[in-house]
Image (cartoon, rainbow, N blue to C red; front, side, top):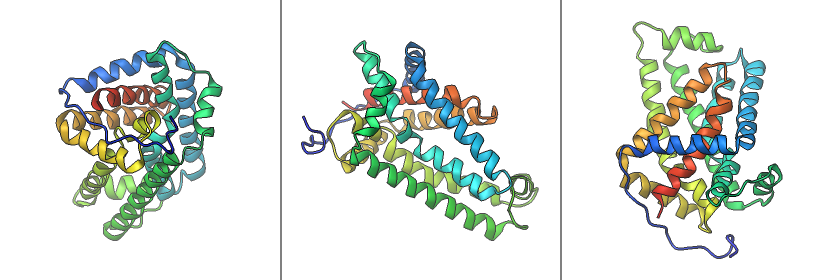
Length: 252
């Protein structure tokens, strides 16, 4: 079937229990070490991107914040090849590196359109964040150390708390729109709108488990970052493989 021209009807979703996010992590961990090379290459590329950004923009907080925010939002698209690896492992197959490259060479416009939407969301977050912090911080925020001193560690200002709340409000719809959308686009001939609506339906059907899943994604990614980005080498593929299993269980 040609997935670009023959679109399927809206998929149905399943409700899952609160214990399932931990099961997805366990399945993702198993996939990573059953076929480690593709995942570790993805993770190494993510860490290398982070090191490059730190080297290039370590004195410019907003460029650095924009780069890392963009990475976190677009990461599900970057992990598309690893979803294909997990799908192949389900049938006892192993994808070669060239097979992963072919996932991108297919130039599926649905994936490119969704990636563009995620990129726009990341840009909107950075611009909104910059406007709020620069408007209400007592001193100019130019370097990362300025943000730490004058926003995070400020004893009386509420800017950091408001910044975190704003981030949560903006991140929630992005997560709800993408939690199963990209694996669904890879796996089935549905359009972008259908994939996004299915993702929202999955969240509505299992709000507690998917809130826990979002927290685990952010926690593991954060731990990967505070290890000097070395932890991302494992965290990125682990979460990508786990996200495939989340999709498999959430979408009927």
